[in-house]
Length: 129
Image (cartoon, rainbow, N blue to C red; front, side):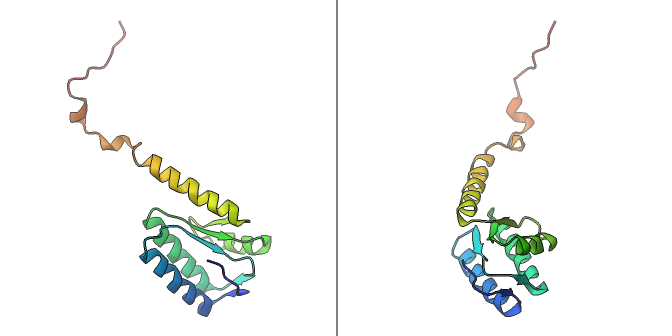
């Protein structure tokens, strides 16, 4: 998604939320939002970004904001939106989504919690003499 508004305020934020929810409802779990023209965000924008990050993470995805502006990056970082990833280029955002999906794919089978003690019945521990 690309936002072309300088202010991520209530009206723009609610329109963004509507579009993002529609995409998540269609089965997407990752969202990349290009905000290169955005210079400021109000409290309603922060709340909606928090909500969308939460919805993405519940679907094992991520939300990435792309902005070339160091000032806007700082504003987003100061907003303390947990798990929001802010990157300077679309290419980096695409790579981040790809890596996140790979980590999810490979991480799904690595948990030792999948095994019960019964799985180890009949296996003895080697003890050194």
